[in-house]
Image 1: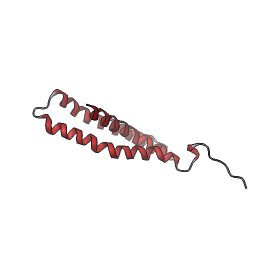
Image 2: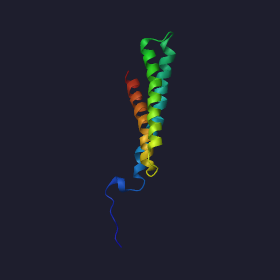
Image 3: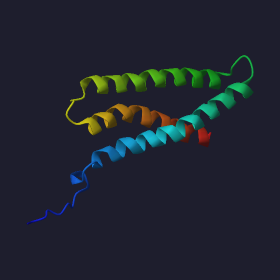
Image 4: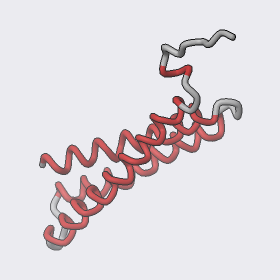
Length: 108
């Protein structure tokens, strides 16, 4: 009986699911932080909103539309055979936006 050594991470069963799951975990942790920063800014911004606040509000809505639009296209065009890769393509645009917003808002 011979056994085959697995040397590449991609050959391990379930290895394709690691990245999408890690992206989902990071979204789960980052989204409340982004919401908290933006809510705090809205509460302390005053009325009428400053030009900076108006840009942030516009950016907030545009990013949501763009990210979820890309995710929808990935979901519709993904081949049904490789579910882990499809999930990664669907979650990827949302993950990228949420994490970049958390970094940007935490720094500024």
